[in-house]
Image (tube, rainbow, N blue to C red):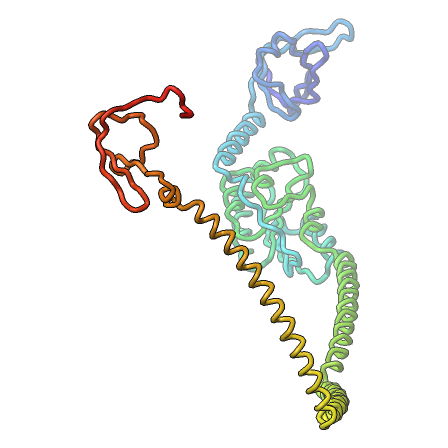
Length: 420
């Protein structure tokens, strides 16, 4: 048989069997899907899924419970809608709609726009939170249905009305069932929220509920109250922050003032040192010191010159000059005698050395042996020192001290005694 209903309390046992309950408007029945059948299924049913199962009815003898043994199932109702949402989610994600840069929240919004239904507890909770945190921040309600078939259309229209009139927008709805939250996952609303020019905060359902609007919004909050807290700065925290900033500013100011006072003191001391009057006084003292030194130096120089002048005057007296002249003449005579003796001695030494060198040079003169009867033999330009290489009939030149002779070799004799 085929049975349709909502899945309640699904549980997979340690052995891999799936136990759950199926419920509709008229009643419910226990169901079990054995491991071998569950392994053939594409997924494990979750609580809230609407299934159409194929199976048979059986009685569990131990407790006498009636149960449905499920052989196969397919999603229907909520399951099909969930698959449709998942498919839309994948498609929007592939377009990069969920990965776009998120707009930051304003630090101090003057006006907060709220999109929710009129007279709901949501607007009351948001108002109370904003008033308790920062009464200077005002709220602007743009009403829209948060349940029914026209939710997406009205929320989109409400967002359009808030453009340019607020600093940040909260789209809020209290808790609800899966079916009630489906409109907040419609494609037209999700794309409108992605293209919205203002920072958008989504507070749809509770923390466990998740719609596609939550994924595309700039910021999300688990509850409407949390959304109000997120967008509104706490005045007490701001007051404390301002107090800390004031303390830091005062500390910085005093430190800066102290540094500037020290710099001013240093500048004053430098200015006092460089003041024209002080500079003039210093220059006057330097001039006075130079004047005194100059006067002392002049006096000292004059005294020294006077002493030298007196000494020169004494030395210029006739008697003194005569004495000096006699001493000079006597010194000159002594110097002349010494120079004459030195000259004669050097002249004798030089003559002796000259004779010695002259005799040595005469001994080395080639003409000296010739004057003693020796002859210089030449064969052309070559000097002959022996009979080696001489031939009969060769012409030779014999040079003597007083001339030369040209001779012809008639015979070459070799001496048996080389010393002969």
